[in-house]
Image (cartoon, rainbow, N blue to C red; front, side, top):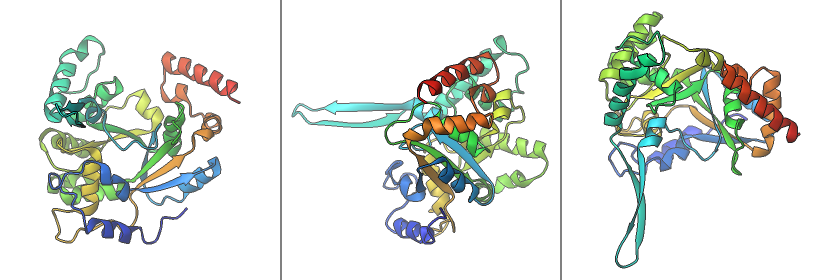
Length: 318
């Protein structure tokens, strides 16, 4: 399933009538579908073919619902929906959100304040990437979004729970494009290209601490736990609090504030493969044969126990 040869032209045509700049004719995440190449697979074989034809370095994410966009746990947690009823009987609804930056700072402070009561060997106070990774691991909302280097691990997370009728989704993002674009938009991010892992980690932590730019950054925390190792995991993080992950990606793909004529990538850099819900048991069985299951991805008794539950479910539905 090669991408359409006119994909870039179609995106450029779409952009002629729309400006992705944050604050200008704000449309939220609604236009994101126009920036994503969405495809479908109706079998395990078609999915494998889709993966093998991706050229270069890609990151993957599995989501149970194909209609969901890419939203961080912090974005989801601070969202408030509301309905307004007027005396004339007219009802309007919408949503707003708490201040992401303020809420994120408070969560970090409270977690750092008490984490030592529960676990030893905590990161250094200035190692924000490791702190956010630890918070994410223990269910605290953060601006990190979990990704994996393995398409098969992402498949498992897409299918672990039964998808809705619309199916689930395997997302892929071009990491080489993302890294190049981050360095282009952030002059202070030149050390991201360094082979020195310590220098890169210091740069990432400095950006997490002081930078407020509409850029998505790849984060590999210096301290990896057993889950991240088993899942071949890493994080993507947005450096701009006032916009969603999707809006920032749209801006990076069109450079609205950099050039008078928006530029787009020469190939799809964000792709979504929709998988039918009926494929769930087949995929889970094939992944288990590859030793990809709850017990291997979540080392410990809880992961093992939950894997036994899923084994029984697969037996019932076979």
